[in-house]
Picture 1 (cartoon, rainbow, N blue to C red):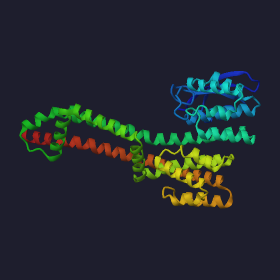
Picture 2 (picture 1 turned 135 degrees about the vertical axis):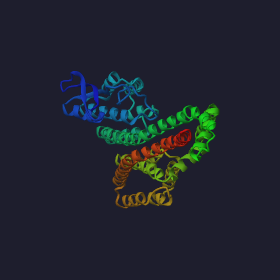
Picture 3 (picture 1 turned 90 degrees about the vertical axis):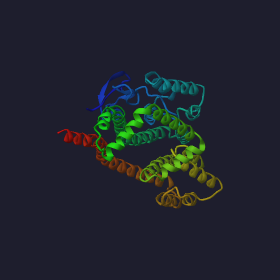
Length: 404
């Protein structure tokens, strides 16, 4: 069923209108409304908690979807000739997210006090990420703020699509795994013990699968609270360790070395890094500033450290391509494209091309992962349940044979 979205907008005469529209995504809904000549001021999914306007709280730096819509609204209204302060007032009045309304209200007050938009955005780093602040500043300097806001809307839309694909690929196996573990725990802890006395009283020689299962059942049913408590303590200790600098670095280094998973995580980060750097450079942001911003967008501390080393080297006057080549974390393709861009003066375009390549690679890997995962999970769950059933049925068959 195609999702429905509730929207508020202004038509070409400035009249406020509201209604619903069906579309595959919120971005498609906004595009269709814009084709009708509507200026969208608020849009959200009909089901609570889904879509950009569903009241989801901002994460640090803001969610990509909400930032995309915010930039799109600013760009559209600014292109239409509206001043920024009235534009922000419209966004504040119509948006259902309380935290965003407060942030926009602060922006409006700062602009009324004479601040530039980039300065006002920079005062709220928990809402608006550095990449948006620097891009807006570059747009203000070059007189292309409308274009920059449109670029950033596309930037955050691509970021959201990538995040949704990753979440979609991981949600299914996660849910299936948890449900399977819960079902197995219930069978072993509460169902199997009812057969234990029967098997022991029969005096039959039990096959090894049954003995193994009974041993696990006695362990779990007899001290399940200790197992649950111990597991929770271990998870808590692991969580606290991962919050430390050393633990987080160790975890990120381990993730990059995992077969299959490590390469996907690296490509996701490289796509984000190259796209952000290329976008900043294309807007006229200096390379050092771009590196200072982009190192904080990496989701892996190992990659962040590598980018810090590149930043320090550039400050010393070293070639970026040499710095990238000196660190083994960056694949040869990134090094070659940076080298080519540096020699030809097309570094921003080369970085955007690298980003597009890695985004396509991630799309392909996730699609293949999703198609292969379902049969693998079915076989795994079937194998576990089949083992439990066989372990119970073997002695029952022997018992029926003896009694018969």
